Amino acid sequence: MEGHGASLTSLMIVIIIAFITPIVLHRLKINFIPVVVAEIIMGLIIGKSGFNLVQEDMWLETLSTLGFIFLMFLSGLEIDFTAFSSKKKKEVLPNGKMEPNTFLAATIVFLGIFIASVGLSYIFVLAGFIDNVFLMTLIISTISLGVVVPTLKEGKLMKSAIGQIILLVAVIADLVTMILLAVFVSLNDGGEGNTWLLLVLFAAGVVLYFVGKRFKNRNFLDGMSTGTVQIGTRAVFALIIFLVALSESVGAENILGAFLAGVLVSLLAPNQELVHKLDSFGYGFLIPIFFVMVGVDLDLWALFGDVKLLLFIPLLLIALLLSKLLPVIFLKRWYNTSTVMASGFLLTSTLSLVIAAATIGERMGVITPEMSGILILVAVITSIFTPIVFKKLMPKEAAKEKQLKLAFVGANQLTMPVSKELESDLYETTVYHTFQEKENQITDSVFEIEEIENFSLECLQKSGILESDIAVISTGHETKNIELAIALKQEGIERVICRIESPSMEDKLKEHEIEAFSSILSTKMLLRALIETPSVINILENQETALYEIELRNRKFEGMILRRFPFTGDVIFVRIFRGNDSIVPHGDTELLLKDRLIVTGSRKYVEELKWELELGE
Image 1: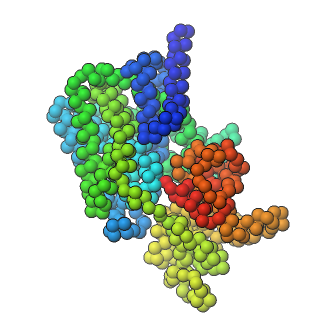
Image 2 (image 1 turned 120 degrees about the horizontal axis):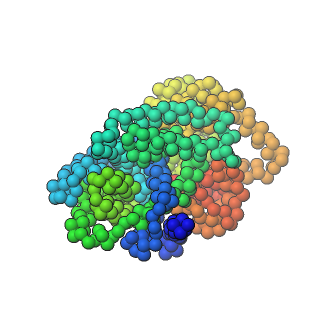
Image 3 (image 1 turned 180 degrees about the horizontal axis):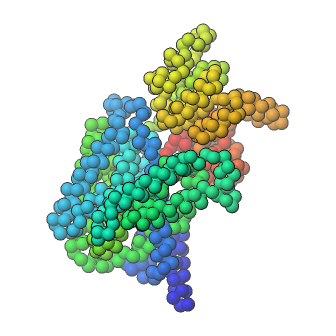
């Protein structure tokens, strides 16, 4: 019983530390340290390097392992595969040059990083610091998505060309490093594993992807996604456990299965409510335990007792910087020195995968526990200073405002005035219509129309519609609307809105994640509202105090309560939609990412608020 009580006491200490760490950071206004790094530092204080308050046991080991598995799952989930799309038209940079092809530039930079990492790894092997070139290459070449993504969002660079290049380099590094780590394990497991068995794992992933895609939008699942059933969350955990078990069965590490599960869920494009639940569970419980335990297990005094290991720390930091700063010089063809240097420093950040590689290397006997500790310590150091240097070096003009491109297919009494009213600093609108059908009164009006030969996908592609962020399909033919909407969605346009008149077609569009608009249903709703609540119609008709929907994407406002909301102006929060819930806002209402805010106020202030909350990522 004494042992059981001691284990619960250790678990209690770790949980309390995980709870108070973000509070301490917030109260002391230490914004430059990522929370996960702070958790490792707190673990150092209560662990072997500090007061030695925690005794390792089965409880902590199990929860820490689950936290590591869930961290790898969320790392895979964090990969946005739409970033690989290179269909967007190149824009002119502030210096007058055309921006580069983001995918091609990112691929070349990553190849440079990998080649530099191989060369630097050989130097460390020849110097006698480490014996395995393969493992050292993975450690030097890896990049932390968990540091890169929040830093880019905070700097409002996610939508910029340089931001997309940095993000893509990190994504490619994450994918390649994880796959090569699995190969490393297979090659160094004493000859018991077979590398070809990894194909079984990836084949299972492909099969599960198509199964998930087939059943994802089935209507019978909608009613099982709420309440006590939560079928989506159950499916995700079943997927993680299945792939983790399969990964271990084929001789790979369990984290590869977890990472693959995250990649599959990302490819299936889950609704943001489910992603928020998974983030909340992972970063609210399991993952903090893992990072605190990383600090607990680190014995800094043992590391500092070896002069050779102490010398290794600055040398490895220099190697990490060189491996990123030299390849990004390629970007000098388009960007100034300050931008290129800032990009190189941010790409130097590394954390989760280095911890994974160090842990695996130590378990397999490829590196010593002391070397594993040094690798983790260096990863923590890079995660602290690289975002700070990035913010100092990155020019402010790089985070320029960017309009959303909105395309209307079909010129009529509905699309024409809406396109004109939406023209602003937030939207760049274009109306496409066939010149054969265009009426004279439209031609002579103030509306500008992009003429196309016919409403075919080929003609629309030639006219540049694939550059749009949102497409509204509203020709005079319902069948053509549906056909074009599905085709444009498959071509990669993020949001497609289709005009239909047959309610039965709505389910077909939903399967393709296309939003449906019906004039009949809209008219019925408008008539009912006019009868029951005429004052609401007055709000909708008033262009200066209309209702607007804004999606919260800026992490800076996540968790903020409305009474502390810093935005001033003529704006009132009317309603908050969170998943399937409709919330009446009040002073203590907490804002969460992906909340859809219904606001009213003057157009000027609403557009400023929309930029701050929705585009300011």
